[in-house]
Length: 258
Ligand SMILES: NC(=O)c1ccc[n+]([C@@H]2O[C@H](COP(=O)([O-])OP(=O)(O)OC[C@H]3O[C@@H](n4cnc5c(N)ncnc54)[C@H](OP(=O)(O)O)[C@@H]3O)[C@@H](O)[C@H]2O)c1
Image (tube, rainbow, N blue to C red):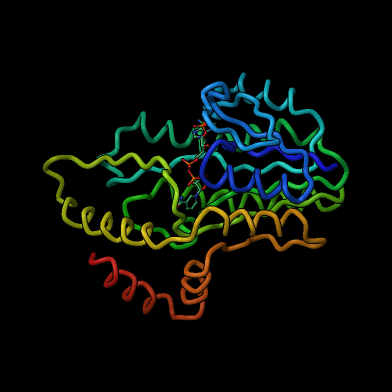
């Protein structure tokens, strides 16, 4: 039975991924910062504690997980607000969790991975086509795409691989901290972008669509590096590639009202 570690598996996308892998015959180990506090854990999934902001926690989790066939780097959160109005400790917190923690955990499990092991990271379409006022989140997700592509080349001679699954908006209760000064010159535009996000989230795909893409990436004999997940996200991604860059940006700004 192949063995998978899915970070942030108690809810949202991670939970759907854990359930899809379990149903496909994987032994699934999920993580949460507080496994004892999960009120309705997904059945058949064993939980380990993991806080991506804590190096000791990462080392202990990698150690307890043992030999893995698959790591799904899913856990993370998001943040919004004009860059210069977002307090530095908050930015650092995001970097520590969404970037440093992901790299640390990947690095910690790699030496013990089974022959042909896979690393699948949940990125975001925001890493390719960012919304305004999520500069650091988008930058980190974009960075994870390059991280994945480089790791893929590193793993290929060993028979392993790495992929990134990039969803557009997904209907979950993802944490998104908002930082805007009361007298911000950006306030109106931030409000318009927030409204666009809220409308998009309301009609977004469910986490199952992302889980289906992760499962395909896990099972495909020769998986591609980047999987854009969700109908709207795929169309948007194609438009951003086929339209001239200036035309796409003008249309995008009009749509966002900025
Ligand atoms: N929802 C979207 O629209 C969307 C779109 C594109 C990409 N994504 C990406 O999808 C991934 C999952 O997001 P989601 O929408 O499913 O959000 P979610 O429902 O809030 O789930 C996030 C998970 O991350 C875990 N987590 C948060 N901080 C952590 C930390 N410091 N250490 C370890 N685990 C931590 C949480 O686990 P515990 O609280 O149990 O510890 C939780 O299970 C994220 O990487 C996100 O950036 C989401």
